[in-house]
Image (cartoon, rainbow, N blue to C red; front, side, top):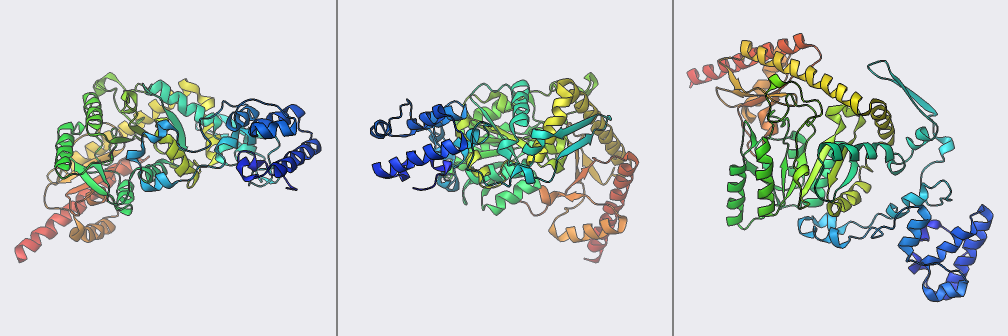
Length: 520
């Protein structure tokens, strides 16, 4: 061996013979001298050697290779070099074949060493920082505050996510602790936005032909991921308080009689997309108990968590909740069966393409392997920008922003409800959403399904308005008599005008249906 790559440090079995090992250590010695690596650091490398070879080299150290490598990086020794630990293996029954086949992340255990300024890193695959194009960024926030990102932070914002995620990861961990306080062991990983997290979690849990429980109406892109993965979906009915525990238990019993064991429940508990409901406090525990009874994972997708219009258990007359947002499935996860998905897309802006995923370490191990081979946790620049903003705000600034956001969307919800009462009465029914920014409207005459969607699009084009048809949010039904109105418009007058135009569309469709009946 005439050259040395420090990527080989953790893989000494490839250095097969005593003679080769001697060449290896002499090469390391020469190379360390060239780069002025401290002799005590080199000596600690001997912990990577079998005892017989340590004596041959004259070097002494204690501890196995993983412990030695962790010590060099100034980090606690990890339980593994990427392979599943005993705690991770207990989740094998929930995992997809793709998850089980994922190889270890070759960089996971050397990332701390790569980021150590006193370490010479010969393992990276990124351009030299001196060639990064951006030297600094100045941001101006809505309140006029200016924030600068420069120096080392700007450099890390242009490196891979592992070197940029530290500050935003700490913020996410603090949010989980403050808002949810999970009772068991948990771990946070960043995501490249909520949809990326959904896709990764589905891929690691679901195989083609496996079964997932899901609300009868849900997030359109999640439906696409389920269908693309050729997964069987078991619909569960909901009501104004969210997913029905009685309906969930009945569905589980039905599947049990058929010999089917669902692997997971996908649920949007707050500001449900598209219905705008919020799961009642008592139902959280009832649904969690059913997950324990029937042994499935809960995938808690909660992007609208901060967009609530009242404190849980209180009326809206008691004021906006701010950050008093109530509990979650994660907050009662005593058995380690909840994967919670949070997103900055609805809290701040979707263009950051960043979110975070929380769950038991045994499951997050596999999430980490999947995201390493796909989204790489999101954009480093977004991580640094968001960390700078949230650090500037602190808790008080964040709550002030959240209260402003809640008030803004509540005002627009009221405008949408008033416009619906004026322009949709007699054509549709609805209930006031309690979170999020969707008004779920049931057309009272006929169905807006595949055969009528072309007519609906025609009338929407003529009236210059668009809504999402209910079939786009329906898991299995090609026809449904619902449409989804989004009230997330800055201009409330324009929102009112849009609802008025929707009323025109529904009247045109009613007239067309009547004409067809007369002809028949």
